[in-house]
Each structure stands twice: as structure tokens, then as C-alpha cells.
Length: 639
Image (cartoon, rainbow, N blue to C red; front, top):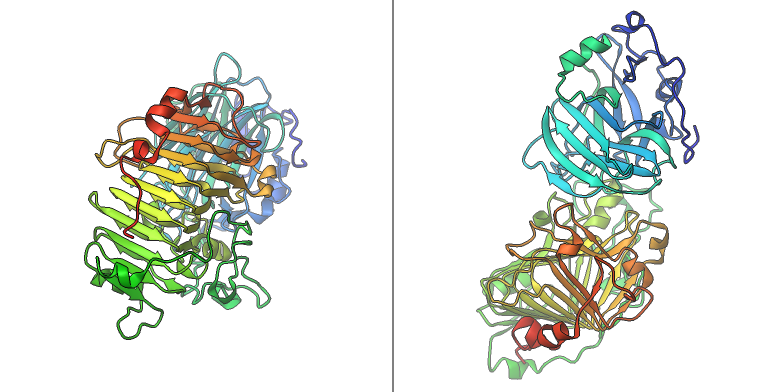
């Protein structure tokens, strides 16, 4: 069957003699309407085997599915492997009249040897005409539906054999579908009555899609069988009871041979320089780093990864009089290689600094991962073009394992001026096959008063992790993907350039958590004033980019709604294709304080909707007209 053209059909010979099927591997058993696929002996070629059983979407199936044999040299399981980063799935046809479908399979997955996080163990979807519902497991050990997600941490559902049941049930309107995922009989995720009109998987039709088609996850799993039961509620039937009805032992686990988990792909060491070499990432000699940097300097007209032009950044900023400044506070100087009266690394200077110090950082490439807990520190770079804090830090699962510069205070101040924060970890990962994309450039917690001026933040997912506190960003450039400005801090972005880089799954500019100024009483969330929102033109062919989703309830200690206000800004069409959207069925967009005010550009709001609303003049006048109203302080630097 060709891709993109799934037709409605019924497998020929729908009613077989039960006795002829009992205990025979490699066939589809149909008792009533049930379909039991047991990988095996009909053909030792995976594509031919699936094709012989009437399954579809098989053009590239041999690249990602294979058979695993048991100790008796018989086919024991179907193996999925999309660790090459390319998604794939096959389809199991349905008649079109189903109101409920249960998909049951016994599976064992694996953990990524490089991150310790699980590979995706399942991706199961129901295409019902032009509507669809989805349940999938990802490398963050979450189960996600068409909307919403449930964390399984610290549960391990991949290292041993488990029973998985995906239950889809259409609502009375024939559009909304409720989807439930059970693991070993326990409900682990539910998406209730969600309407998703889409034919993106393989066209309109009636089928179950099975495999791995999550753009942010690599999949690896073995399946002993796939059982599809239309319409009948079998939730209270055990595998033993179902097996008796089908004439096949659904509990038996064969001894598989030559069935190793995926080995480590990571090179032994991280690249030595800011430009990756072919030998460092196990590429052919002619390979060229797509984010190469010449002479350890940032080209503002063509940034290293996105190739975008950064607006608002001053490459030759006027510096304060350091001698005069040293009369009022300690000034420490950092120079690559060190020297008399200077420090060789930023970390050394931070360790030596007293509270209130200014650390002047001369131009250079500083390959450091920084943790700042001292109060009232100011990092002052010579120029954002040539003063670069840089690292490959997206190599550990979880947002807290991927932070380049982490600032954690108790209400004191922190400032950063004329610097580039470049976390290249996600780029490095992709060259050797890791799906980890989170690459935080700056994370903050409980910064009471912060000023960030004339800085670039170059990451991918979670570029900015602003947990709590109050911050003022001015004349900065921020780029990322998936969702790249996240957390619950109160932050005013003044005249900043916000750029969405290409990601095939689209994404979200903000993932705001419940507003949390750290107990300082100004819980106003993210405010973008006089900013520029742009997006990679290639996103035209991707899924939509949203201004934000919310609320991320695990991203702060706030108790109220997530808050994002975009005002007096220019918004490109691709930056706001989807407007605002839900985080899940509970944390919906309409419950948050998402507002827009006097913006322009093709993506600016013209007419209100239930989830996209204007800020009122009264709200603007009383809360958002000046930085002091938003933040509770006047942003200023020590000079």
C-alpha cells in the first residue's frame, strides 16, 4: 500500500476456523472482530510478512522493523528500532464502523546507554476518518496523548516485559475521542474527549497506526504480538482469559537470542573547539559542522546554527570606566590563559569574588559550565560577538541536567551584559544520533532584581529556564525550538529579538509556569514589550508554532495562572500560527492570563477568540505601562 492513501478495507477471509489457528505463529487470528498478529512464519521478511496480513504503510518498514529469534530458532518477536532518528510505523486496517478500539501488546523496551533515559516503547494511533487519537511513550518517560502528558518517573516500564493496553473510545459527537493507556492493568494516562481533526499520518481512513512517529523521540522495543479488539470492552479480561478465547498463550515470553539493547553512540570525548570536527563526531572526513564559527566570533548577520540575523545587538558596546567603577566595588578581570592580576576562567573569578563584584570578561571562548550562588554578581563582557560562554551540555536527560549557566539566589541581584551564552549540546547530540534537544543557556531561581543587556542566548529546546524571581532583559536575542522560554519568573523582555528555529513538530515560544516572583509580590509572568518575533521560513512546512502553552505546573512554585503579555511588538505570521494552546486537558489556555496589546505584523491579533484575547486599557495602565509596575523595581546596572 502506498503512503498517504489508506483505504477502507477488510482483511480477506475474516472468519477463520479457530482450531486451525490455535497456537500457530505467524498469522492473524480473528475471533469475532478481534485481530491477533503474531510475528513469524508466514514470511521471514518483515515487509512481506506484514503485507501478507493486509497491513499497510510499508515502504520503509524494513529499515526500522525486524524479527528477533528465540532459542529454538523460531521468530520470537517483532523489533522496532528508530534510533536513527527517522520515524516509521505500519497500519492495521479497520472497517470504519468502530466506536471503541483496544490495542494490546506485550513489549520490552530499552534504556539509552548514553543518557539513562528510556527509548520510546510505543506509539499507537487510531485514525477514524478525518479524526485521530494518539497515545505514545517518550524518552522523558512520559505517556502523552493527542494533548496532555503523564510522567512515569521513576517507574521503569522498558527494562522488562510489560502488558500494554491502549483503549480508544469515540464520543457521541463522532469527533471527540477518549484515549487511555494502561500498563500492567494500571491506568497511567487519560486524554478525555479530545477532538483532533488531522490526516497527517497516512491520509484519511480507518486504521490503527503502530510503531514510532514522535518527532522528538527515538524508539526501541520488542513486541511479542499486537492484538486489536474493536468495539468490545475487554478491560476486565486478563491475558489468560483473552488467550483462551483466541487459542494463543498471550502470557508466554520466549527466550530471545542475539537481542542486545542499542549500544552507546556517544564519542569518547566532547569536541575540543566551538566548531566540531568530523573525527570528533564520527563523521566522514568531508563532513562540515553546520554551525561552524570562524575565529571564535559570532557573525550577527548569520548566526551559527539558525543562520538568522540578530537584531538589537550592539557588537561594539560602550563599556563603563572600570577604574572608576573599581572605586566603589571589586572589579575582577578574566582573560583566556590568565596572567598577572587576572583570572583564566570565569569560574575562578566567581570563586574569588565578593558579593557585589563586577567580573569583567575579556573577549574569548570560555568553555565552562557555571553555577552562581553568590549574591549581587555582575558579568560584564567585552562584546557579545567575541565574549562567548560555551558548552555541550544537552547530554543528560531532564531539564536540570542540561544547564550552561545556572544562577540560584535568595532574592539578591544578578546582572549580565555583552555576552553570548551558547549551549551547543543539542547540535552535538544530533551528529551522533541522540534525541536529547534540551540545551539551557541560562537558568535562574529567585533572582530578586536582575538586568540582562545586549546578550545572545543560543540554544534549542528550553533555551531560557527562568524558574522564579524578577528579571529585566533589554536588547537581547533569544532563539530556540520546541518550547524555549520556560518557567514562572516575572520577566520583562524590552526590545528583544525572539526567533523560532526550525523543528518539524512546530513548537511553542513560551512554556510559562504559574507566575512566581519568589514571594516579592509581582507575579506578572512574561511581558514582551517592543520585541520582534521571527521564525525560520522552513517552519512553513512544519507543524504550527504557538505563542505559548500553559500552564507548566511543574515549572515553578506559583499557585495562580501562567501569565504572558505581548505588547507593542512585531509578530511574524509563522511565529503565531497557532496562537495560544493548552498544556493538557486541565491546564488549558483559556484558564491562563495570555494577552496581546497593540502589536503589528502578519501574526498580530486582529479579532479575539476564547483563547486569544487583548489586554485591556485598564490592565495596561495599572500593571503594564512601566517597568516599575511590572517588576516592582527600576532596572539599573552598577554604573
